[in-house]
Length: 461
Image (cartoon, rainbow, N blue to C red; front, side):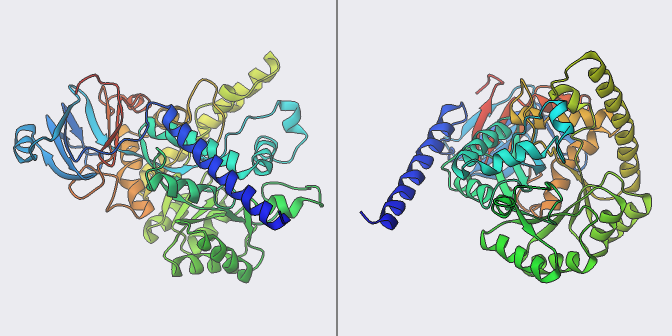
């Protein structure tokens, strides 16, 4: 058999194996996809509207063909339900819109190296495992993404914006498989490869393989023309959003070219910008969202508010994450880490309180890409809720940031983020009152996506 033909057959076999393994993995968990009921009525003691803080008690939601048809008092909704509609009674639970993680990395699961290894590498806490992910096969990486996506969904995240670190097309392939019903997972907005300058994440790779490795994860933006080409390359893979990482090293002309090229294609631009210079660059060119924004000034918050630019807060390290996932070698290292975590908590509390006072539009994303011992990816992502509360954010603002405000930032306010007629029937329920204890969101007991029950631990049907 000719070599080219052998390669083609081998490629088809690999794809068949990957598809079979993905389906088997999706079926292995309790959330194996089943066709949604044609109509159902979901009843609960309370329905909380995160936009207003209003509560409907008791409440019922009529769902047909994956969409919300009616919301109201149980008796009225039941009277309008078609014959044979399934009743899902959640008892004393609180019903909410499906949660939105606006900054996720579903194809990355970093194990932080020991401190000695971190110290001898550029970007040592992140780059070593990222490089390991890049050099693994795309098939293996997507299969890991299948698992992490299902775990996010089971924790109540029915929509996720995946902002890079997914290989060339790992997140778009995962998105499409979920949308087609082949896999169980959240609705995904995929960013494809990050646009960034060389050396931003890794430096000094072996020159014999540097380009091949780098090109699997990133697209270059050294000049405005190169930036336009990079946007076009991502658009070729049908991404939903363009992600740019600016370490204060992307020229104003290049940033403007990225935003112009993306907006011409109807794509929003999310800019990783942590310091004052990169934040200002994103503001100046009219980016749609600024990710992280840790050093944002009050003047910049005011400018963002005036321009309608979202700040996407990522409280990943706001509550001592390193102390929980780092394997520290001795008491001295543990003490030093604890002190650093305490300083981080103080800084983030100041940021959160300034953001809330500024009235800027903001959402919240987990930025979770780390292996968190003892937790699923969804459980790890949900730790952001308690971290934000400890930083001083009111529970009502947290709820709004991960539902209605996030939907607005993503451009999906007509589809998700609220429990109202016409939107997808994406619902979650918790046993208690998240306005009294935001930690309830770390223990979601019921999940419905598109009218399909993914999880129901409340015991009533």
